[in-house]
Length: 405
Ligand code: GLY
Image (cartoon, rainbow, N blue to C red; front, side, top):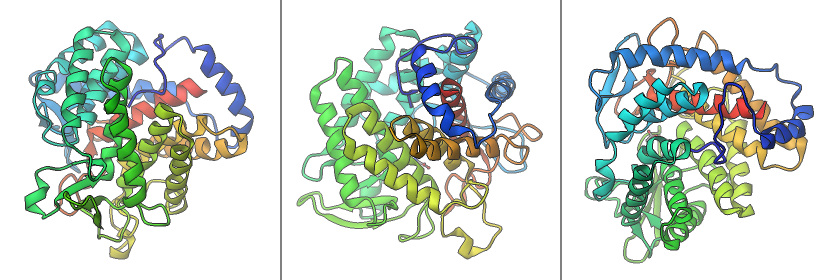
């Protein structure tokens, strides 16, 4: 959820030397993709977010999704899994524009999430919630209250760790409901960043160890041999043994839920960034290659890679494309072979170009950034909708690309 480094600088005008070097390194390999007009797309995001800001009713009403063919936001409240993305967008707006009014809006939205960080984690999602909001806020302002809140949240997240299994319990609520004694979902990879951040910022070393062990255990059991992920890995709490791989948001236990694979790409790339362990980089490439090899021509996946078996009218998931684009951009910077790095970077740029087209941008429909995401197809929730996390990762990817250009 961070943007690979702790650099702080005015995005609109200055690019730091590291990225200029990186850009030069990669530029020769990237000529096959027309240069994206990144500022134009970021300005579009700013205009849309300004419109949303005008309709946010009270400070703890957090924009969440807009149904297909509708123009009004459904809101969520602090503590829901999506509650960190709108504050995160506001921080990215501040980072891009350096306009104090965005910082003020980000501060207000972020403040609503601080109380939850002193309570036990009710799921693994505290990483999503806090790193997008407080994490970006701390990166950009250094506010000590954000650091304290993040450290609290990390300690509470670690309470869900089962050392016998070697992973965090993602969904305590599903233990009895689904008879999944210890369940770990692929999305949980994203939340390890909170633990790694905490270990580096005054928290205990065991938080780092938990994150590494979780990622290793998930590599072993959370994937099929070809590198495609299960959504949920179920384990025995007593023996720690892997019981089965199943789905919750995908089409079937043996299908590939598109967003799940993108959480894996992003998550293992982040693990490499934070640990320097080459096995995580190799694995990030493996899961990225599976994902890329199964995409349709426009690089925006159907919500599940087997959805086409239901018919060609099945919806795409733009959120998966946005997460993939952001993850692949980062992945491309860790690969020393320039032509291999360019494959990931070019694909990510192409994804962003498609997402920036009239078909996928919300510009003529509503005040989100993107259309055509799928939240939870088996429950028929947020189907072909605008969803806040699609917007968050779209904007993050644009900012990452701007840094690389
Ligand atoms: N983490 C929940 C989802 O991706 O839908």
